[in-house]
Length: 346
Image 1 (cartoon, rainbow, N blue to C red):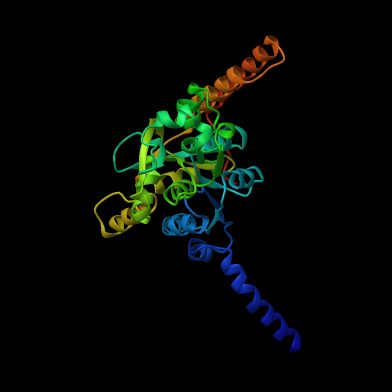
Image 2 (cartoon, rainbow, N blue to C red):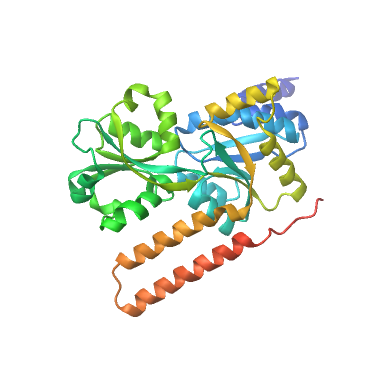
């Protein structure tokens, strides 16, 4: 009897810890007992907790649709998510640009869908923000004397927070973001916008989609900000899945995403409300690895630009570096065009 009581108490103590480790989506799918959880990784756009809460309703619907629990990995940095993918701890993820490209070309993942937004544009824009009344009303002042200013930027894997501003704005003017400024803060798009709004930085990289969301969440702080530069269009983020999943299962998940929030039923309207709260998305469209060709081109252009400005011992070393960049880009394009290896359903 004593042993049974100890076992019972042990289970009671462990149960809250287990519940804390899963999302409502996982709890809803727990009835499909034997099915292994589908582990979903979230690109950190705001705070980790906020991102997790935003995705929970959609993932609960996904769990019900596939009859399988869904757990969430919400992290605070691009690097943490990238490492989790490399360790095989993520089955499905919401990624953009360089991270999606690396997941597909290096970690055996596959694009199944791409997000859409209400503006109908094929992408979003990287932005450079400054504080109203700071005297930085045009980007020329930043480029002329970057050493005077404090920069808030995204991680080096962030397309709009680093790669595109570096490629399209700073490097063409001889400014390297990592070394040219007086100081820098590296963080999420929400963190960089707050840094400028609160006077902790003078300029910040951001993007049009996240600035819209920031404005709705922090209207007073957003009122202090102004856009002093914007990039060309950047393709929207993708949903990727591991190639090891049976093709029938990937197709099932893809159908769920493409049909989500479609139609005029009360259920569809509720799903549209979920998407609006989820970075103001409009829905998903079917996509494959070829949707990453623009991301590959951006990474290629940035690598070439860095090679042009880097110091080499001689011209032969520079030429060798450029040749490696060209070969890597060609290999990436071949991988993006190739159909994924299909696995038979056991």
